Image 1 (tube, rainbow, N blue to C red):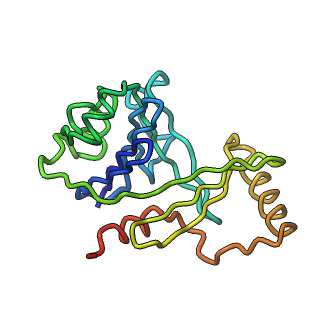
Image 2: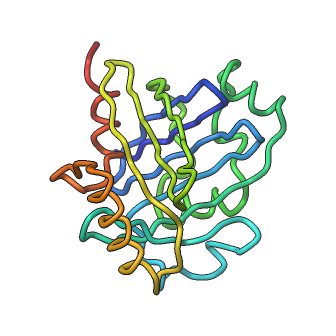
Length: 196
């Protein structure tokens, strides 16, 4: 399953699509529609699939696992946000050419199925540490299940040192680190797919 998450200011929506990789779409209140696809090999992606003007390929680290993720964004206005989140306009109508190319040529998910169904909402709250360069994301699904992710963006070459510093800072603050350090996106999606 590939979840497509469409997130507005306070209205996250997730759309279910069948595939093997993890991808999602989100809308930020400031007017950005993003397609993010996990488990990608950044070094083997053709540059025209991820133009610098539209996105990036970055690495996510969860415990000892590092995986590439493609992120493609486009600006949208408040009318487009409303059409997608309130009026339920088809998601396919707002995709950018690079997003369509990735969905078609990499994920083989184009055209998008007409029967995409919204799941959710997911409540995401992001907090910035005042004295440290970390973001703390608190995710809550409708059942009330919650998970917390802490991280920071660094250059790939600095990832190991930044990870060790983060683990040291958490230990000094007496924050227990969960044994399961895998990416929690799939866990959240399974929670959303569970019958209510």
